[in-house]
Image 1: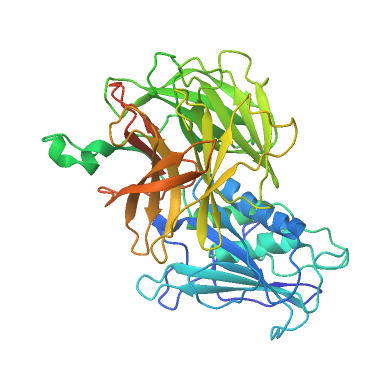
Image 2 (image 1 turned 90 degrees about the vertical axis):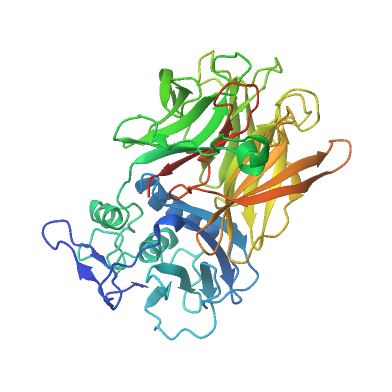
Length: 501
């Protein structure tokens, strides 16, 4: 709950440290346990709705920036995915996290700007759903004399994570805003202490799955479909991985190397190349020095691509999101990194709805020179096919891509990742692999094939599904890819970078 003027409304919680500048509280269940998201569901989907008030793109953009601030400061423990704008919405338990502008009945008083409702799981006591209501009866939110939306959203998202009110007036989680006082638009140390208390950092692991062996075990007698989890990429304690892709850095014709986007505590972003240190083993060592990306924003997705069409996917496709803007950058890693071969703006939504990105040969030319981007929308997911240089697109015009809708999912399930692999051993990586987390916290692999051509229309053809054995820890968008881990010419190992459970 966020109030304005000088009225303080408290919530139940446990005071962790009231000394000095540390004065945060965390919300607790009746049985005395801390309220937080379950460990396997820290990729949180949200949608925006209204009971009549107009929700403008700039307002959704402020929400997106607030979510991005919490996600960044969590060091990869939390991510948020925007599912889109609804024509209506209400704070009711319906299985969806909804941020809704309320113009009708507002029982909380005109001084209350926003209210967060947490719905807990009856089985575990963990957070199952959160709805946030914004008072659009007493405030317009898009006018100068309205409450600051970014400050209010930061505060309510803290509640969404299970954080209570702070006793520190400089904290975002302080429960009152005063007229004439500059809004709190960045998280304070006290807010970060609360975040790390509920969502402490965990060891990272590399999980690898041999898809042909998983899908067709009778054809591979005696072969293990699951590699032992390997240690995470050794990038240092003050760095964390924000995106992962496969690439042929050695240009030997095998997609056997990992490309990682790594962020540090100072906000700097680096690209790192990694390769398996032993043939067929799930342990990686860094290839060469890190390369810094100095463009503002966050790397949301990576892929190795055959940009120059020489038969090797040795160039890097880097998707950077900055506020509501998305750009695809194509780098030749043999040259100076900060001079991309091409910068292509994308037709992006006002908040981040990206799930994953993969490179593939979409037209049968023999070159892995197209990109598929998976995005979330209300009640559905869509793929967008983007072509590289030479497509005739006007420079500087946002590329909308070619939309390819996906079939529906199980009730309560969420897609968390996309990869394009040769899962069926055909010698071409046109199998689309979707990683789904169902309502029972089981991971599923769904296998499709891209069909069609640029001359006509594209579609996806269903192939197979299976429940993932030995599931990883929580999976976040952008941290799943494929590899030819054993360099046998078949690009068919699914790689997941995840915190260990």
